[in-house]
Length: 396
Ligand SMILES: [Zn+2]
Image (cartoon, rainbow, N blue to C red; front, side, top):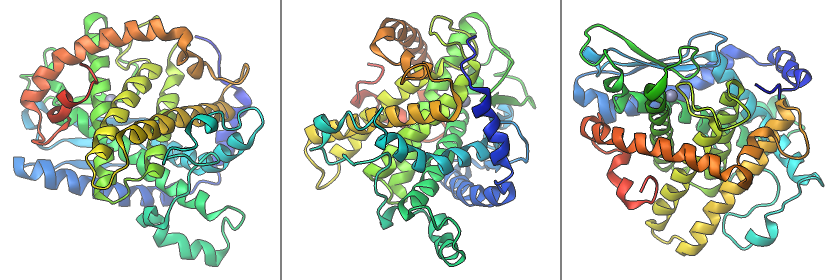
């Protein structure tokens, strides 16, 4: 595997850690997670006679897990380790300021301006304005204290609001990805476990336990299905919280991109090797972004007073492309050796690799369609993403 990471940049994480108050970050995360667990139980598990639990263990592991006993599927558990929550906070904390620097740098500027400046989603800089209506409950609750104590007095208010919105969106996406493993009953596909009693099936997001052969492809396909439903549930969350707005959609794209870059650490800098239980993050990003874009166009198109369909499509395309550019360079600045202006992750997303991506995509698509037949029959949530799969082009 290429040594694409810059040791000096990686070491910065350890220095920064001394400034992160992890118990405080845990308190913030628990406010968000408590709401997500409540919604999951009200919407899904209570009517099944069960209860979902979610824990945030104090553990350095940058990992999350979904845990279920097949004989007791209505009482599952999600674990999001504080090692991962701290990284989510770190990304959210650093992203707004660095994104603006990247956007103002002569190396990058805003190459999309000439083509997209007339779309409703267009904004100058690396992050959009966050209107007060988009402020998260957490930011609203600590805003006064931050101002009184003069903490972060050198940081613009918009960057602060953006940090907390991105933190919430990224953590919510992780939670819903794990929930999707559970409600899609992925344990049904694990050979030898479907009929076992008192046997816990654990899905780790980062695992050294690698499946082989066809199991590997099927497992990777289920990861994309969890990504897709996780994203769909996150968009529903934004709608529910009245935070469905171009600014939060942009941050959702950025959050996903950062998350896939984080998981890229364990993968080759090429797309030829289809191995492991998680797909290559470049493929995960491409497939999830395609789904999210189509789902957004469908949602926005159905909204009263929405802008014209052509403008919706152009806005979503703009947010998708801009988030990839800014988040990609952000990641490179934070962690990677940069050979030119693109990271290796970004290079694998260019036209040069379109054939490799298409071949990988086709293999996963076949497996996803096959497994979707079972998932649709056994899904634990009566209103779920399979309801509208026929209304968008994704997987068609
Ligand atoms: Zn997963």
